[in-house]
Length: 371
Ligand code: GLA
Image (cartoon, rainbow, N blue to C red; front, side):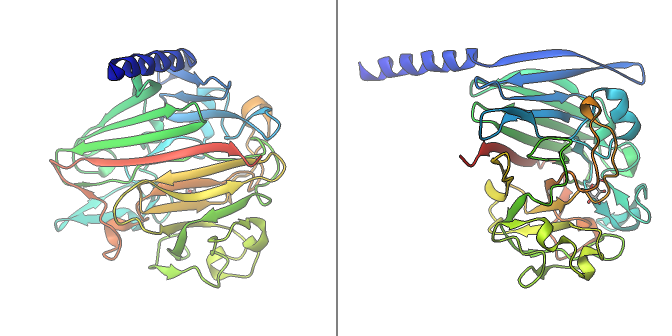
């Protein structure tokens, strides 16, 4: 008798929790004459995430501070037109190859491929019209009784120079405890290279607040990829004794101005970290960010072997949501990924996906407060 009663009770509570979400969608303008939508998922506490199917872009993430006051912690724009016109990859899905490929060239099985050098002299974030600029097919679903948004896009063989038709699915889930879970899946019909991530820009004091130099950061990594003058990794090096050691939670501003060749004399952090214990591809905490005034905490977990820490070095004050300006270093990105330029670096994990294989990656951005 016990089992059916328990099952029935569990079912009731699941139904109740499902009812505590609200999911809505509304038109978000047009791109090249095609309508795009904005989907909003609000959980029981009133915290919400909004995502458009243009670029699979997270446009807002509204979560409480330590006093329960809701605030938007990601940078973005109010209209899709502004994303098209000037977005520095705010909140988007980045692909097919997030980050850089040196000189826009790579080989698979001896055959050379050329992709756009849109970040001279290198390829960046999938090229001229990467996944951030595509309109994805959207479907609202339900994962374990949590509403989700599933986005799909099939990139044709040869698009942006990449081989193979690539079928890509990205599923966003917003949980009751303020975690944004992103699951990526892809298959190909020819050997290809792949590196998918999300490019959200966070400011835990609220988008449009001052710099993130007072945010504290912890990264679970003993090693990172030093870079050359064009931001291409030159190998793998220990962080110990350098301004790159974030094993202990450290204020971002503490060392950013240090005379250090890798900080490119004042430009800042824009490096991949080699995450600890990632051989088994299990979900593990990669980084924790805390912001003292709001008490907000961001915990990033991922199945990926690396994470790019970018300190908003190239933000130059664009006007974003509600007319707020986004000054230099007023946000940070933590982009879970395979290592930059892996197609050309034999010592890095392979970024090659072959027919019959399925690429998967999961990353969770969990927001909480320290009190
Ligand atoms: C990534 C790169 C940076 C920069 C931003 C977008 O984080 O590593 O160099 O291109 O994207 O501006």
